[in-house]
Length: 298
Image (cartoon, rainbow, N blue to C red; front, side, top):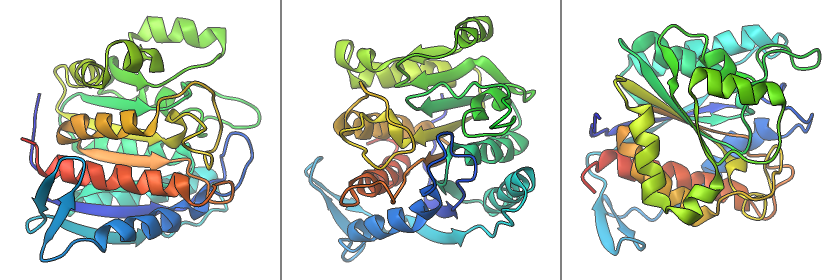
């Protein structure tokens, strides 16, 4: 599988939460909340170096460019129009040669991100979904076809996305029986939180990359913050007991980052957060991704 060094990262804010599945507004404020927490990390860079305490090493940041692309301008009055505007914005970032790190927003913003990357990659693409939920809803009277519960279902309708290259990591709880059949018919791989505890983080990451990278030419990573147990992410869009912990998630991100072309992080809700702990977790995910993706050999 491709392990490419990336040095140009664009932070792209998508402050949109009109399709939040539980009707809790607030994720639209996440981009600035995550940026605020990220600045605490960036402030510790001195002379183009930062001390990685976990790794007991100095990291040279000289070659790494981190550009804040700002928040994409959105019309908001029409959901599908807004999704098209998001795609256009991400198209621009990709065309300029940057690695997008998309800050949502609810999970519906992943669909235009996936579309934009799909249109640029020449061959099959893999998807790694870190999430508590399956997001395979086809359509509903309240959410339509393009909600934060449908982005993976829509992605599987793209010509170069095959279910055998889609990995759902951290999914749990209970869901519709139709999804059981859909998952098995499409060959989607589910890795529940149990695998983190029984087989370990690195084995989970290896299995994830094996599936997402099997004969693909690019990988999209979407991180719904509710993949964390609610104890670690009180400010998430929808709580689901029994998730993974922060250490497991960060270690996993560092393992897969060198193989990922685009990342988004969604469903952080500053209005329900406690002491900005969820935004802080999201910011750490972003920086760990940047460090790991820019230093693919470790």
